[in-house]
Length: 144
Ligand SMILES: [Zn+2]
Image 1 (cartoon, rainbow, N blue to C red):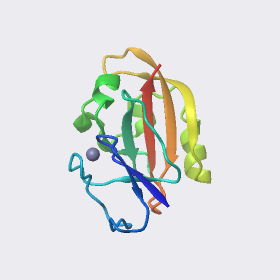
Image 2: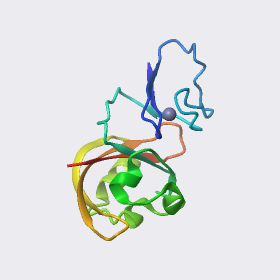
Image 3: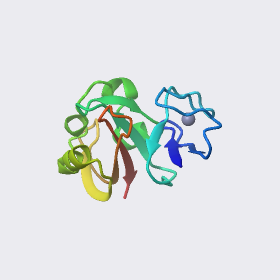
């Protein structure tokens, strides 16, 4: 069974039998029309205020979903192509290395980021590796 989540609106979907035709190809979100879904190994329930940031294998931001602006002060356009740990001034970027090297999730990491205004904000971040061989990752940021 495969679980998918929309990085933008956080709609979850489950591919029970392949009926929806999920594949390695990009699949649009049926809720908001966002261009691709992120595959998760296990089901995951984000908090209402959680914001998702999707990165490529070089940790550069590919997409930022709803809620990220409220958390960080950055619009998607401000984040695209930027190294995620750098642009958010992550207090500890080592979980990213673990996720990318070992392909495991690192959930519930209590970290700090800096908003666009330079204000430190305490967040809990769940890190997920991408399973589509691109080597990317997903960050789920939740204020605490
Ligand atoms: Zn969506």
